[in-house]
Length: 94
Image 1 (tube, rainbow, N blue to C red):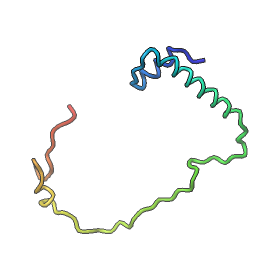
Image 2 (image 1 turned 30 degrees about the horizontal axis):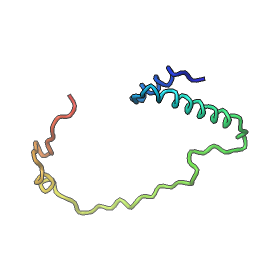
Image 3 (image 1 turned 135 degrees about the vertical axis):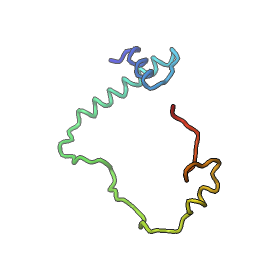
Image 4 (image 1 turned 60 degrees about the horizontal axis):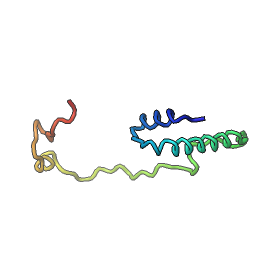
């Protein structure tokens, strides 16, 4: 069903470095998973309503009330470096 080459390919995509002795064990695990999925595919779910979550969800939001906050000068007072009214940070993308 699944070859050692398949396992190595999936591992490479996942950036996982496998030792040779791990490949056979993981191949067996993946085959077990696929066999279980095949069992699930045989179930009759025609009477089951589709859902995106098993529990009812609702947003819990606090009121968006204006509160006192720092002024720009107060916030920039702790800056190591600032430029044109903003924090200046090292460039991280070249």
